[in-house]
Length: 394
Image 1 (cartoon, helix red, strand yellow):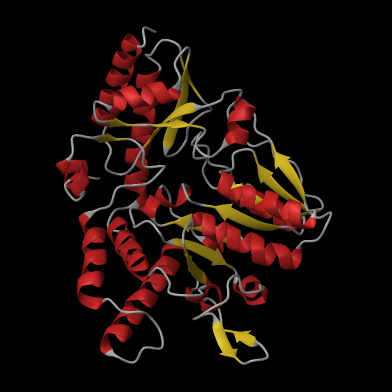
Image 2: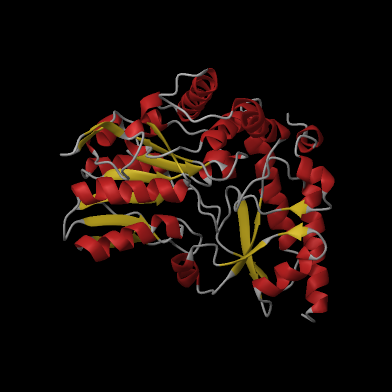
């Protein structure tokens, strides 16, 4: 069983600020172990990785590659199938601009859901503009459940593991099976999912999976792309420069082996080391205990929010967040007022405009949770929402 008070003490920002932080879907807070790891690198071990022969470079290289190994173990992948990127957005763009360009042609279809974050929409829209692929949209019912059809003639399925608005978790295993049966590849946006449940890419059998470090209690500026070995090996390099080359002559170049082939320039060394620390820290706790605690938070939020007159919860939240609208109240006004009293919520379309259009709303307010949140956080937030409605005279 989790000791939430003990966990909270490991997050300096939660002790040094009078804040009720309910915005972890945007970016999670960082435990001291992560802050220490990043600080230690910059103050004791700072050097660039690979090819340097001095002690600092060798130490930095070992730590950076150990971070890759930790990520691989965390999601059930092989080490060479892990590419470090700038974030989940960078990972998806990498696939779109390498695998997509190399394997898709005019008239080919990719499927994506209305649940998707813009990061899993816009790169494919750009590719559609560039080479003429067709985007097929997977709709949802009023509860936010995907209305799955067959994937006949689809080349790639792009799907979120967890909606950053509705907290909906699609049946990824079923989607992968249906897609593969139709001959399609599958890319999973796991930006939200990775912090709420264990992922095993070998069991899931997805072809690509992407996530960001900063939602996993790690630093900003680092992301992960998992890709099956044969796919990564046959994809062209994304960017040119140092580190991604085998050899360069006046006539041309050859690329390095994977994953270096996709890591041009100085990689996010300190950030990857911080991500390693975050994974080690989170791995101290069982997924069963984490999910039990977070489900209690979801249940508390739903029951507490239902007490607010005119409030409508969007969809049927399952994991990570609850989003809602209130009659006559703009989410920006609401979150600005409650923010004055230390309650951190998020307002807007949450980088998911097609989903909000499908739901018939322009914007929503989102309450999202991390391992450090308590029922008292939620109850305090609900009190402040009610107080804000009095100010707005609702």
